[in-house]
Every structure is written in structure tokens, then in C-alpha cells.
Image 1 (cartoon, one colour):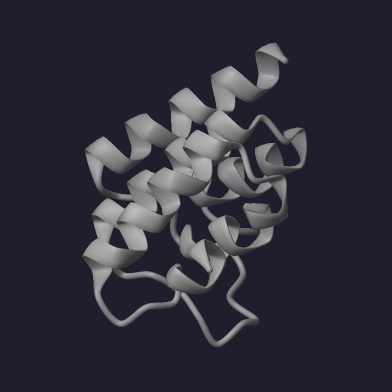
Image 2: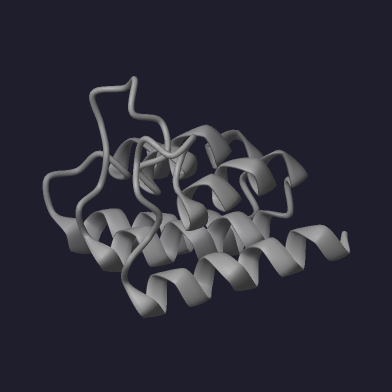
Length: 105
């Protein structure tokens, strides 16, 4: 149910779902949280809400699945030079924090 809420039409619901998934440590949510970072451009879903992207990055760091490191770095720096990196300062800071946390694991 929380994973489905990541695709809700209301960005507040999506952000709350990302926060909750991080707090409970639901590793099955990692692919959907990565989508919320707007990393997977081949899907029909991405999130234009800065707060949802911030919450998704935080949740990925809290969940602790090291498979999220590469997509987090791609979101931070851009993807193969085709897609630009994250431009919003507080989202970048959350992504950087999540990467540090995951690399310490």
C-alpha cells in the first residue's frame, strides 16, 4: 500500500509514503524510490516534486540497500551526460547524505 502511494497524484502523499518506507526499512520499495528520484527515464513515472525527491533520497539512505548508490550518484551528477544532475540544493544535500550513509555500510 505504501509503495503504491509513491504514485499518488498528491505530492504530500508521495512524500509521506517515501518517509514511511524509509522508517520501516522496506527494501522492496528501493526500485520505486529510485524512480521517485527521476533516475529511470525509461519508465512512465518520475517525480517533479523536490520534497518527494528529497524524501526518496533520505528513505534510500535509511533502508541501507547498497544497490541504491549508483542511481543516487547518477541523480546527483547526471546520467551519462544526457540528463542533468539534481539542481535543487536541499535535494542534492539529501542525496549526498544518503550516499555517504550507504558507503559506510
